[in-house]
Length: 238
Image (cartoon, rainbow, N blue to C red; front, side, top):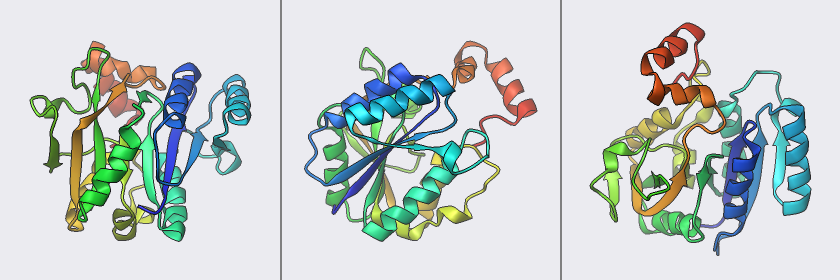
């Protein structure tokens, strides 16, 4: 692994995001890396907080309002931009979402996992709750604690490394721009390209689901209302 680009997309939810940032910056990484937050149209107040934190903590902040007028979410733009930069530098792309807290060994562990599997497309950390139980979106992995699983199920981008080989084989410019999220699609494209996706239940990360998009909590509290809003308002296209 020559280099990694670590990114965290964020929209508001700044206190939790800064927990994510602190944990990433405390990582025990031996691989050269850059760390960029993509601010996806947070409020003016929260954008100011992110700008101040960037100066204080040393991460790069990209305000997507400087790049596009397209309303949030702009995950596709972020992925496309980062893919091109990673290809130029032969770097891997490591996504840590803003509702995730990594452990000091997590990110290096994902890099090591990618190095150990020459056929890897995605190497992902399983997510857990405060009690250490595997939680959404990896409920299917319960019972596989402590294992590294070559999975045909999708890998979430909660905390996932996309290898340089995946970035070469899968053209993000060809993804469906009508969708909001791309972890399922890219997981499938990885497999279709002949690569394997590995879920590391050996590297759990704390996940507080949907902190930046609280309306999605309806999926658990009132699923009928969640799916009604998703269908009628066009939210959350996967």
